[in-house]
Image (cartoon, rainbow, N blue to C red; front, side):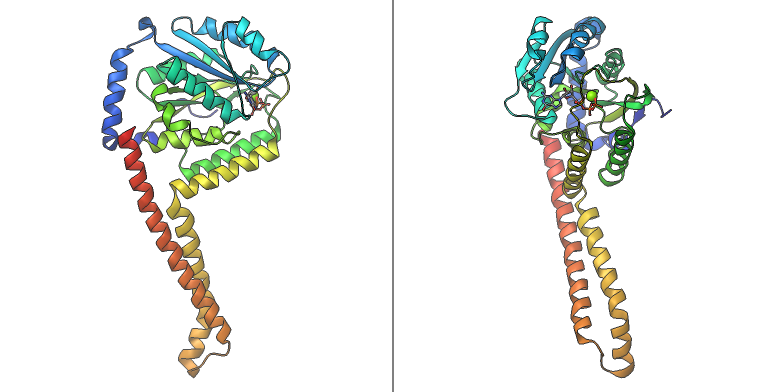
Length: 340
Ligand SMILES: Nc1nc2c(ncn2[C@@H]2O[C@H](COP(=O)(O)OP(=O)(O)OP(=O)(O)O)[C@@H](O)[C@H]2O)c(=O)[nH]1
Ligand SMILES: [Mg+2]
Protein backbone atom coordinates (compact mmCIF):
# COMPACT_ATOMS: atom_id res chain seq x y z
CA UNK A 1 0.00 0.00 0.00
CA UNK A 2 2.47 2.63 1.20
CA UNK A 3 5.83 2.99 -0.54
CA UNK A 4 8.52 0.47 0.25
CA UNK A 5 11.72 1.82 1.74
CA UNK A 6 11.20 5.49 2.49
CA UNK A 7 14.16 7.60 3.53
CA UNK A 8 12.82 10.62 5.39
CA UNK A 9 13.68 14.20 4.46
CA UNK A 10 15.23 14.59 7.91
CA UNK A 11 17.55 11.83 6.96
CA UNK A 12 18.54 13.37 3.69
CA UNK A 13 19.48 16.57 5.43
CA UNK A 14 22.08 14.85 7.57
CA UNK A 15 24.79 15.44 4.99
CA UNK A 16 27.78 17.68 5.49
CA UNK A 17 26.65 19.19 8.78
CA UNK A 18 26.85 15.82 10.54
CA UNK A 19 30.41 15.05 9.59
CA UNK A 20 31.41 13.93 13.09
CA UNK A 21 28.45 11.53 13.18
CA UNK A 22 29.33 10.15 9.76
CA UNK A 23 32.90 9.45 10.84
CA UNK A 24 31.57 7.45 13.75
CA UNK A 25 29.15 5.69 11.48
CA UNK A 26 32.02 4.58 9.25
CA UNK A 27 34.02 3.44 12.30
CA UNK A 28 31.08 1.42 13.51
CA UNK A 29 30.60 -0.14 10.10
CA UNK A 30 34.24 -1.15 10.01
CA UNK A 31 33.84 -3.10 13.22
CA UNK A 32 30.60 -4.78 12.15
CA UNK A 33 30.78 -5.69 8.48
CA UNK A 34 27.95 -8.22 8.61
CA UNK A 35 26.21 -11.08 10.32
CA UNK A 36 29.29 -13.28 10.06
CA UNK A 37 31.10 -11.06 12.54
CA UNK A 38 28.38 -11.85 15.12
CA UNK A 39 27.07 -8.37 15.51
CA UNK A 40 25.63 -7.80 18.99
CA UNK A 41 21.89 -7.23 18.86
CA UNK A 42 19.73 -6.42 21.90
CA UNK A 43 15.98 -6.90 21.60
CA UNK A 44 14.04 -4.88 24.18
CA UNK A 45 10.51 -6.10 24.97
CA UNK A 46 8.30 -4.06 27.33
CA UNK A 47 5.73 -6.31 28.97
CA UNK A 48 2.73 -5.86 31.20
CA UNK A 49 0.86 -9.12 31.62
CA UNK A 50 1.93 -10.58 28.27
CA UNK A 51 2.46 -14.21 29.28
CA UNK A 52 0.59 -15.46 26.21
CA UNK A 53 2.65 -13.38 23.80
CA UNK A 54 6.05 -13.88 25.39
CA UNK A 55 5.69 -17.69 25.25
CA UNK A 56 6.00 -17.58 21.46
CA UNK A 57 7.82 -14.31 20.97
CA UNK A 58 11.10 -15.14 22.73
CA UNK A 59 11.75 -18.47 20.94
CA UNK A 60 10.79 -16.87 17.61
CA UNK A 61 13.20 -13.95 18.09
CA UNK A 62 16.00 -16.38 18.97
CA UNK A 63 15.29 -18.46 15.88
CA UNK A 64 15.10 -15.53 13.49
CA UNK A 65 18.18 -13.73 14.85
CA UNK A 66 20.40 -16.79 15.36
CA UNK A 67 23.11 -15.37 13.09
CA UNK A 68 23.74 -12.51 15.50
CA UNK A 69 24.82 -12.45 19.11
CA UNK A 70 21.30 -11.81 20.30
CA UNK A 71 20.26 -10.88 23.83
CA UNK A 72 16.62 -10.41 24.71
CA UNK A 73 15.76 -7.89 27.42
CA UNK A 74 12.27 -8.10 28.86
CA UNK A 75 11.36 -5.01 30.90
CA UNK A 76 8.44 -6.04 33.00
CA UNK A 77 6.00 -3.62 34.61
CA UNK A 78 5.35 -5.97 37.55
CA UNK A 79 3.02 -8.30 35.69
CA UNK A 80 0.75 -10.42 37.84
CA UNK A 81 0.53 -13.32 35.35
CA UNK A 82 4.09 -14.64 35.71
CA UNK A 83 5.44 -12.97 32.54
CA UNK A 84 8.77 -12.14 34.22
CA UNK A 85 9.51 -15.69 35.40
CA UNK A 86 8.47 -17.16 32.08
CA UNK A 87 10.76 -14.76 30.21
CA UNK A 88 13.64 -15.67 32.50
CA UNK A 89 13.01 -19.38 31.93
CA UNK A 90 13.03 -18.75 28.18
CA UNK A 91 16.49 -17.19 28.46
CA UNK A 92 15.77 -13.47 28.47
CA UNK A 93 17.32 -10.87 30.75
CA UNK A 94 14.51 -9.58 32.94
CA UNK A 95 14.42 -6.07 34.35
CA UNK A 96 11.71 -5.23 36.85
CA UNK A 97 10.38 -1.74 36.34
CA UNK A 98 10.25 0.52 39.42
CA UNK A 99 8.05 3.12 37.80
CA UNK A 100 5.41 2.52 35.18
CA UNK A 101 4.64 3.26 31.57
CA UNK A 102 5.65 2.04 28.14
CA UNK A 103 8.25 4.78 27.55
CA UNK A 104 9.80 4.29 30.98
CA UNK A 105 10.15 0.54 30.33
CA UNK A 106 11.76 1.09 26.92
CA UNK A 107 14.26 3.58 28.28
CA UNK A 108 15.30 1.14 31.04
CA UNK A 109 15.81 -1.58 28.45
CA UNK A 110 17.75 0.72 26.10
CA UNK A 111 20.11 1.76 28.92
CA UNK A 112 20.75 -1.90 29.74
CA UNK A 113 21.42 -2.71 26.06
CA UNK A 114 23.84 0.22 25.81
CA UNK A 115 25.73 0.09 29.12
CA UNK A 116 25.61 -3.56 30.14
CA UNK A 117 25.21 -5.53 26.91
CA UNK A 118 27.15 -3.04 24.78
CA UNK A 119 24.99 -3.98 21.81
CA UNK A 120 25.74 -2.58 18.34
CA UNK A 121 22.10 -2.52 17.39
CA UNK A 122 18.96 -2.27 19.53
CA UNK A 123 15.54 -3.53 18.55
CA UNK A 124 12.25 -2.70 20.26
CA UNK A 125 9.18 -4.87 19.90
CA UNK A 126 5.92 -5.30 21.83
CA UNK A 127 5.40 -8.50 23.79
CA UNK A 128 1.93 -9.17 22.40
CA UNK A 129 2.83 -10.98 19.13
CA UNK A 130 1.37 -8.22 16.99
CA UNK A 131 4.71 -7.83 15.19
CA UNK A 132 6.40 -10.58 13.24
CA UNK A 133 10.01 -11.15 14.40
CA UNK A 134 10.84 -12.08 10.79
CA UNK A 135 10.58 -8.38 9.90
CA UNK A 136 13.41 -7.54 12.29
CA UNK A 137 16.15 -8.96 10.11
CA UNK A 138 15.46 -6.61 7.15
CA UNK A 139 15.41 -3.69 9.53
CA UNK A 140 18.74 -4.70 11.09
CA UNK A 141 20.29 -5.02 7.62
CA UNK A 142 19.37 -1.42 6.83
CA UNK A 143 20.95 -0.09 10.04
CA UNK A 144 23.99 -2.39 9.77
CA UNK A 145 24.66 -1.32 6.18
CA UNK A 146 24.67 2.32 7.26
CA UNK A 147 21.62 3.37 5.22
CA UNK A 148 19.78 4.60 8.31
CA UNK A 149 20.23 5.06 12.04
CA UNK A 150 16.64 4.34 12.96
CA UNK A 151 14.25 2.13 11.01
CA UNK A 152 10.57 2.31 11.93
CA UNK A 153 7.98 -0.22 10.75
CA UNK A 154 4.89 0.76 8.78
CA UNK A 155 1.99 -1.39 10.00
CA UNK A 156 -0.41 0.03 7.43
CA UNK A 157 1.48 -1.84 4.71
CA UNK A 158 0.12 -5.23 5.76
CA UNK A 159 -2.43 -5.31 8.54
CA UNK A 160 -4.55 -8.29 9.55
CA UNK A 161 -8.28 -7.58 9.82
CA UNK A 162 -9.15 -6.52 13.35
CA UNK A 163 -5.52 -5.98 14.39
CA UNK A 164 -6.18 -2.28 14.96
CA UNK A 165 -9.49 -0.75 15.98
CA UNK A 166 -11.00 1.93 13.75
CA UNK A 167 -10.38 4.54 16.49
CA UNK A 168 -6.70 3.59 16.76
CA UNK A 169 -6.35 3.46 13.00
CA UNK A 170 -7.65 7.01 12.56
CA UNK A 171 -5.88 8.20 15.69
CA UNK A 172 -2.57 6.87 14.36
CA UNK A 173 -3.17 8.45 10.95
CA UNK A 174 -3.96 11.80 12.58
CA UNK A 175 -0.94 11.69 14.90
CA UNK A 176 1.35 10.78 12.00
CA UNK A 177 -0.09 13.60 9.90
CA UNK A 178 0.48 16.06 12.75
CA UNK A 179 4.00 14.73 13.42
CA UNK A 180 4.82 15.17 9.74
CA UNK A 181 3.54 18.72 9.34
CA UNK A 182 4.32 20.13 12.77
CA UNK A 183 7.58 18.40 13.69
CA UNK A 184 8.87 17.18 10.34
CA UNK A 185 8.73 13.45 11.15
CA UNK A 186 8.03 12.02 7.71
CA UNK A 187 6.55 8.65 8.59
CA UNK A 188 3.31 6.96 7.63
CA UNK A 189 3.14 5.22 11.02
CA UNK A 190 4.90 7.36 13.62
CA UNK A 191 3.49 5.30 16.51
CA UNK A 192 4.73 1.90 15.34
CA UNK A 193 6.33 -0.12 18.16
CA UNK A 194 8.69 -2.18 16.00
CA UNK A 195 11.93 -0.26 15.52
CA UNK A 196 15.62 -0.89 15.07
CA UNK A 197 18.33 1.66 15.82
CA UNK A 198 22.05 2.10 16.26
CA UNK A 199 22.69 1.68 20.00
CA UNK A 200 25.05 4.66 20.07
CA UNK A 201 21.96 6.92 20.05
CA UNK A 202 20.83 5.62 23.45
CA UNK A 203 22.10 8.56 25.55
CA UNK A 204 20.11 10.89 23.26
CA UNK A 205 16.82 9.06 23.72
CA UNK A 206 16.84 8.13 27.39
CA UNK A 207 15.92 11.44 28.98
CA UNK A 208 12.36 11.47 27.72
CA UNK A 209 8.91 11.03 29.26
CA UNK A 210 7.59 7.67 30.39
CA UNK A 211 4.24 7.07 28.69
CA UNK A 212 3.05 6.06 25.23
CA UNK A 213 4.18 9.48 23.90
CA UNK A 214 7.75 8.23 24.12
CA UNK A 215 7.40 6.65 20.67
CA UNK A 216 7.24 10.14 19.11
CA UNK A 217 9.85 11.70 21.37
CA UNK A 218 12.36 9.01 20.53
CA UNK A 219 12.14 9.74 16.80
CA UNK A 220 12.28 13.51 17.31
CA UNK A 221 15.39 13.23 19.51
CA UNK A 222 17.27 10.99 17.08
CA UNK A 223 16.52 13.17 14.06
CA UNK A 224 17.49 16.29 16.03
CA UNK A 225 21.05 15.05 16.43
CA UNK A 226 21.30 14.20 12.73
CA UNK A 227 20.17 10.57 12.88
CA UNK A 228 18.73 9.31 9.60
CA UNK A 229 15.27 7.84 9.58
CA UNK A 230 13.72 5.20 7.34
CA UNK A 231 10.40 3.45 7.18
CA UNK A 232 9.94 -0.17 6.19
CA UNK A 233 6.68 -1.99 5.46
CA UNK A 234 5.97 -4.68 8.05
CA UNK A 235 3.08 -6.94 8.92
CA UNK A 236 0.80 -6.39 11.90
CA UNK A 237 -1.49 -9.00 13.48
CA UNK A 238 -4.16 -9.19 16.17
CA UNK A 239 -2.63 -9.06 19.61
CA UNK A 240 -2.49 -11.95 22.10
CA UNK A 241 -3.82 -10.88 25.52
CA UNK A 242 -5.42 -7.63 26.65
CA UNK A 243 -4.52 -4.19 25.30
CA UNK A 244 -2.81 -1.72 27.65
CA UNK A 245 -3.60 1.20 25.38
CA UNK A 246 -6.15 3.78 26.61
CA UNK A 247 -6.97 5.32 23.22
CA UNK A 248 -8.38 8.69 24.28
CA UNK A 249 -6.07 9.35 27.24
CA UNK A 250 -2.95 8.12 25.47
CA UNK A 251 -3.92 9.87 22.22
CA UNK A 252 -4.31 13.22 24.00
CA UNK A 253 -1.06 12.70 25.88
CA UNK A 254 0.75 12.00 22.60
CA UNK A 255 -0.78 15.15 21.06
CA UNK A 256 0.31 17.24 24.10
CA UNK A 257 3.84 15.85 23.76
CA UNK A 258 3.84 16.72 20.06
CA UNK A 259 2.88 20.32 20.91
CA UNK A 260 5.79 20.46 23.35
CA UNK A 261 8.04 19.10 20.61
CA UNK A 262 6.78 21.82 18.24
CA UNK A 263 7.69 24.40 20.93
CA UNK A 264 11.17 22.88 21.29
CA UNK A 265 11.95 22.07 17.66
CA UNK A 266 9.77 24.46 15.64
CA UNK A 267 9.46 27.54 17.93
CA UNK A 268 9.22 29.89 14.99
CA UNK A 269 6.21 27.99 13.69
CA UNK A 270 4.43 28.14 17.07
CA UNK A 271 5.38 31.61 18.39
CA UNK A 272 5.93 33.24 15.02
CA UNK A 273 2.65 31.80 13.70
CA UNK A 274 0.72 33.08 16.74
CA UNK A 275 2.48 36.47 16.40
CA UNK A 276 1.57 36.88 12.73
CA UNK A 277 -2.06 35.94 13.41
CA UNK A 278 -2.23 38.51 16.24
CA UNK A 279 -0.69 41.27 14.11
CA UNK A 280 -3.07 40.51 11.21
CA UNK A 281 -6.10 40.48 13.52
CA UNK A 282 -4.94 43.78 15.06
CA UNK A 283 -4.53 45.38 11.63
CA UNK A 284 -7.99 44.25 10.48
CA UNK A 285 -9.53 45.54 13.73
CA UNK A 286 -7.73 48.86 13.40
CA UNK A 287 -8.56 49.60 9.76
CA UNK A 288 -11.85 51.39 10.53
CA UNK A 289 -10.35 53.53 13.29
CA UNK A 290 -7.46 54.44 10.99
CA UNK A 291 -9.89 55.45 8.26
CA UNK A 292 -11.87 57.61 10.76
CA UNK A 293 -8.72 59.31 11.95
CA UNK A 294 -7.55 60.03 8.40
CA UNK A 295 -10.97 61.30 7.25
CA UNK A 296 -12.37 63.12 10.31
CA UNK A 297 -9.29 63.62 12.47
CA UNK A 298 -10.75 61.69 15.40
CA UNK A 299 -11.85 58.13 16.27
CA UNK A 300 -15.30 57.12 17.53
CA UNK A 301 -14.10 54.13 19.63
CA UNK A 302 -10.89 54.97 21.54
CA UNK A 303 -10.91 51.65 23.51
CA UNK A 304 -10.69 49.87 20.15
CA UNK A 305 -7.50 51.78 19.39
CA UNK A 306 -5.99 50.53 22.66
CA UNK A 307 -7.06 46.97 21.86
CA UNK A 308 -5.69 46.77 18.32
CA UNK A 309 -2.48 48.54 19.34
CA UNK A 310 -1.95 45.99 22.09
CA UNK A 311 -2.68 43.15 19.67
CA UNK A 312 -0.16 44.42 17.14
CA UNK A 313 2.49 45.06 19.80
CA UNK A 314 1.98 41.61 21.40
CA UNK A 315 2.10 39.98 17.96
CA UNK A 316 5.40 41.65 17.10
CA UNK A 317 6.73 40.61 20.52
CA UNK A 318 5.67 36.98 19.95
CA UNK A 319 7.31 37.02 16.55
CA UNK A 320 10.54 38.33 18.12
CA UNK A 321 10.42 35.61 20.81
CA UNK A 322 9.93 33.06 18.04
CA UNK A 323 13.01 34.31 16.19
CA UNK A 324 15.13 34.24 19.38
CA UNK A 325 13.83 30.78 20.33
CA UNK A 326 14.61 29.58 16.80
CA UNK A 327 18.16 30.84 17.17
CA UNK A 328 18.53 29.08 20.54
CA UNK A 329 17.12 25.90 19.00
CA UNK A 330 19.69 25.98 16.19
CA UNK A 331 22.54 26.56 18.65
CA UNK A 332 21.28 23.75 20.89
CA UNK A 333 20.96 21.39 17.92
CA UNK A 334 24.49 22.16 16.70
CA UNK A 335 25.83 21.69 20.21
CA UNK A 336 24.08 18.34 20.62
CA UNK A 337 25.26 17.11 17.22
CA UNK A 338 28.84 18.02 18.09
CA UNK A 339 28.85 16.30 21.47
CA UNK A 340 27.00 13.23 20.20
N1 LIG B 1 6.92 -2.74 31.28
C1 LIG B 1 5.79 -2.19 30.83
N2 LIG B 1 5.26 -2.56 29.66
C2 LIG B 1 4.13 -1.96 29.25
C3 LIG B 1 3.46 -0.96 30.00
N3 LIG B 1 2.36 -0.57 29.30
C4 LIG B 1 2.34 -1.30 28.15
N4 LIG B 1 3.38 -2.14 28.14
C5 LIG B 1 3.77 -3.09 27.10
O1 LIG B 1 4.08 -2.33 25.96
C6 LIG B 1 3.67 -2.98 24.78
C7 LIG B 1 2.70 -2.09 24.01
O2 LIG B 1 1.46 -2.01 24.71
P1 LIG B 1 0.11 -2.41 23.98
O3 LIG B 1 -0.95 -2.64 24.99
O4 LIG B 1 0.37 -3.53 23.05
O5 LIG B 1 -0.22 -1.08 23.20
P2 LIG B 1 -0.47 -0.92 21.66
O6 LIG B 1 0.45 -1.79 20.89
O7 LIG B 1 -0.43 0.52 21.37
O8 LIG B 1 -1.98 -1.39 21.53
P3 LIG B 1 -2.60 -2.79 21.04
O9 LIG B 1 -3.30 -2.46 19.79
O10 LIG B 1 -3.51 -3.21 22.11
O11 LIG B 1 -1.49 -3.78 20.83
C8 LIG B 1 3.07 -4.33 25.21
O12 LIG B 1 4.04 -5.33 25.15
C9 LIG B 1 2.68 -4.04 26.68
O13 LIG B 1 2.65 -5.20 27.47
C10 LIG B 1 4.05 -0.58 31.24
O14 LIG B 1 3.56 0.28 31.96
N5 LIG B 1 5.20 -1.22 31.61
MG1 LIG C 1 0.62 -3.88 20.98
